[in-house]
Image (cartoon, rainbow, N blue to C red; front, side):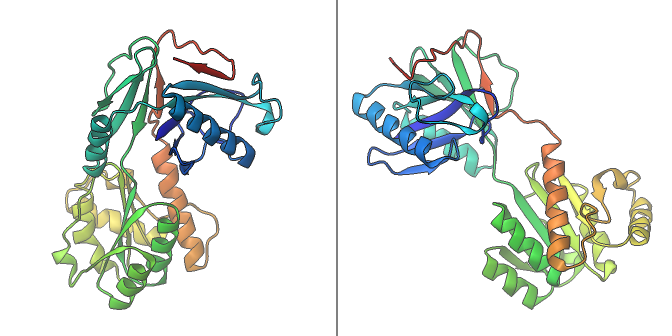
Length: 309
């Protein structure tokens, strides 16, 4: 297979720097780099040619490319790195880190045509003419509650690419969330709440109309590194909730706990409320900048259509 990485762009492009596509020798592919069918087919063709030659390439598309019939949105120009020589052991390291929910990066030296895995975020500078593509754990959403909003949130989050855990005392809620693809756990009482693996790539939301369930659960969640915490309820309910958490020692709970949960979009139906919650989760996650692609010094590109080495 060849791994194709978007390493440079001029103007806007449909995909961010660092976006990738994997292409097999038979032309099978996973991922997207341009959002246009003709350009994607050309990328597959060039990746197959690189595999046949056994050489890495830089492919220029759009503005400045000799493929004058391939145009990208808004007149953009992009450069793609086609790598045909990725080491299986390096990929195994990346997969191991990904399964353990740790950030990791594939670091590529363009001159030597070699890669290695960087397993932790650091300020270590890149070597000359190298680039580093970060791979982050998949986002998870833990939904604790019951009813139509909990079910709707599970469905929308799964459709958006989240791994979802549904924890509920209600069997009908568990059944519906499970059919949508969520992992489900029955919660007999709030005091028996046992949090799944919670990390900086996990969001958690409580969705109870009976707010007596909340305090033991929120007490556990506030001890976690989750990047987002939210709780259903009105403004007055949230004020009472924060007061109760203050009595438990959580003086600054309001800084972490979103309530009323969700962006204020005038939502009324369960689906709209679920959409507003997922939008707020997304907003919170994107508020922190995380590198996707890092470029080393002297990373000068030849803007010809293809360059082999």
